[in-house]
Image (cartoon, rainbow, N blue to C red; front, top):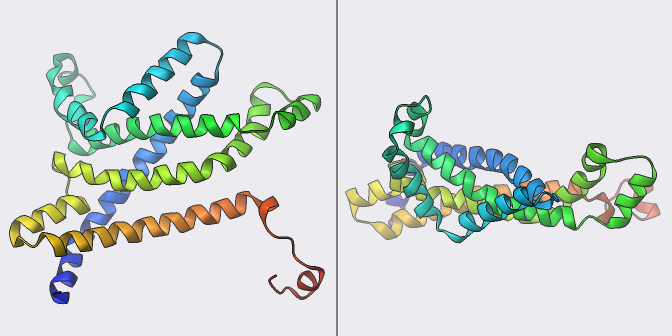
Length: 240
């Protein structure tokens, strides 16, 4: 194993980390907004909205993300109305095409995660809130949403990690993130194993940090699951 080459490879791939993180973070944030919208549509009693949400989730969960990226990047240019619209200066850029594809994809999965979290809220707590005079948006904001977030956080954490790995597909539309830089380096050196080992280690480090952050959020949002401190530990401040 050539450790000098591994170090050089890391230095060459490191500049792709910010782009990878921007792609993942932007798509997750935008996708979370869309996911919440489609989850509300799916849980509503308005059948046209329910059918629209079901169709959206079915399409984007049942087709490969790579195909979706190709359709957006190469397909949007086939519509003259779009090419001459105000959106074309944005949508002709590979970066925004990748963001759009990743956002639409993660929104489909995220909406199902959120819907499951909402449906897992105990019905007794909802009835208790209604007995206290809450209803409508206040009930959703004060009771349903916080409990649903706690239930959905582990699943949504997995989706965030999957999106970090999915950014590697952006390299097929000329974006030089980690995988794009790795492919370029391999074409120059023909040393695929070492390059992909370093690229995999970088993704591993990024996802390890994300995993720890999600675990900290779970700990903060679930105080009732923490072990109770013994009286002695509570007085002395020592951990149990």
